Length: 170
Length: 201
Image 1 (cartoon, chains in turn purple, cyan):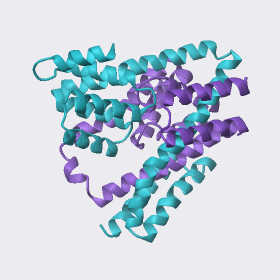
Image 2 (image 1 turned 90 degrees about the vertical axis):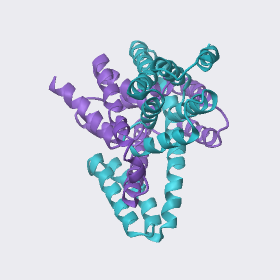
Image 3 (image 1 turned 90 degrees about the horizontal axis):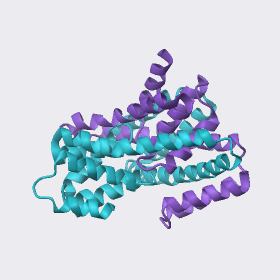
């Protein structure tokens, strides 16, 4: 029971300190791995399942909650990522006054920059735990080029990457 | 099916009710494979362009605010636009429409995965998809980071250097496990905020 509460609070903390659906990854990763509540492979699986499901990218945490702690974990994870953005409702009235303050803008930018770096560190770390090989680099670079140039929809990239994964890693 | 539901919403008389908001956000959520950008695209298309429940300014204000609140941006967008269209019941309806079906599908996919995970092909496919997730994150961070670097350059050399050093330093500290992630994020945010206060506005 206490562990379940801590699990919820850890995801809630990570989400309060994030901007965007992936930005809570570094904190959740550090906290759950250090407690041995999840392992590297579950992060890889959860992030991939999150891509397959519709809706916000942030739902990868729900998949992780399920893989780590079953249906209750998934429900708690869903609640933990839903609460922080709801701050928007009370902030709606004061936002116009806050928006252009340099301190607010700088704080947000700093958060985004640090999250960008740490998200990439965790993702490459997880990739490296399997060994970064030619196939994973091929998929990675292909998705960077195709998404960066907006050439195909994400659905096609999912099909392509799953097919290459099946061919090479099976 | 989606277009017929949409035209039913369009042909209704009177202001949209919470139930209409629920239906619309359910459609938006289920249409959006590919994360927040897809949600943003469909939400704008339906709310502003097709149904005209929101003006462009109302949309822009909701979107702007969603960028400064913590967590998943599109969750904030759904709640805010629901609030503008149909009050607090609208906010709850939009949130439920966006989240409930997608959360259920995510749980079902995870449950199916745990049952078939022992099959060698399944994990292999997910490994492939994970590499694509990493590629997608490179693109996303580039898109989010580039305007910040531009804004930093307009503020001078030190902010510009800081905008490069901050992600690199954060990546190193997190990869090596030198400090709790929360400290890294809050420290970086405070540092850049201080630079922003000091510099030209």
